[in-house]
Length: 102
Image (cartoon, rainbow, N blue to C red; front, top):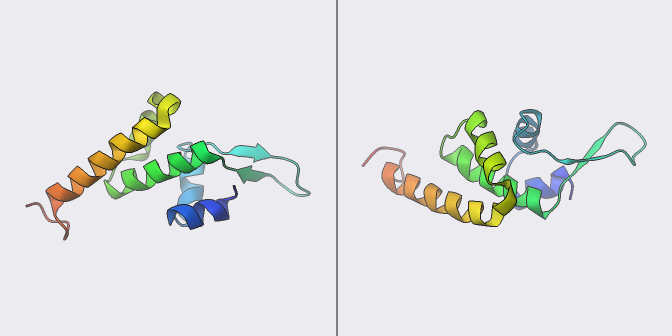
């Protein structure tokens, strides 16, 4: 998958994706089989990571903490995604729809 595919599948902007790649939160696969520069490729594991990152961004989790979360649970991203989805839903229940504490 390309960055465009990740943008389309997650709704994250190319700029956000680049920021989190540059920060080391998600580490794409380097493809040197192109004529100029380096292209980054992503697989299904990366797609799961990006969906997790999107939820963590929504909850205000810092880059540093995101890296720790993804590094500590990288062997079971499917389970981590389930946990993050529950956390995300609970977070939004607590702050309410308008971003105010209930």
